[in-house]
Image (cartoon, rainbow, N blue to C red):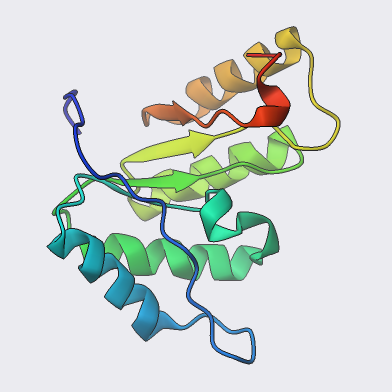
Length: 146
């Protein structure tokens, strides 16, 4: 991915699920097509709007594959890697890169917020681990840290 200024719609998709709690692949693909149709310049998943904290690891993998496959390279895909532990977030970032994501997005854990030094160490480790650009997702809980 080349460096460029992004201007326009960069939605973080919700997670489509069936009434019995399974991933609704058909609806998830329709969501991707919908935002592409209306001018998305990048598409994200596993942000707070996606309810990332309620999704199993196997469903994360499936959803990442669906979104990357459905965009078919038309726009960059950014995958959220926020987790309650730094090592888990770094593993999510590695997987996102392996599956073809163009960028990652990371917020600090919501529980047991790190110090400024720990936050810096986390983002540095993330940057050292993957070659993807990183979007820092600011959340109210981390406003005083960052």
